[in-house]
Image (cartoon, rainbow, N blue to C red; front, side, top):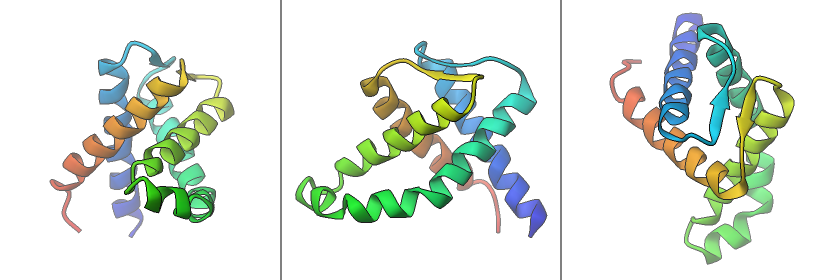
Amino acid sequence: MLIRILLRLAVLACAIGLTTWLLPDVEIDGGFFTYLWIALLFALVNAILGPILHLLALPITALTLGVFALVVNAALLGLTALLSPDFHVDGFFTAILAALLISIFSWLLNMFVRD
């Protein structure tokens, strides 16, 4: 179970790395372990605050046919950037695009990881 969690964390770190490579306004200062730290912090923020924010935003998310969930994910990514001095996201729309790319890359990479 621990190996599976660490593997999913590495996949998330790769997704964040791909996103920082594609978007010039998303920066991480550091190397491999910094990416793992950001992935762990992002996973914890998503696990603790994500369900609460998604539940509170459920009416707006339903009205926008799920698009507002990207705004919630961008807020969680921005909160992660606030909590870590090594992670910088410049702007709200950059955070939305970064959250979308992290979700897509994470989904694609998790398809190659067996349970």
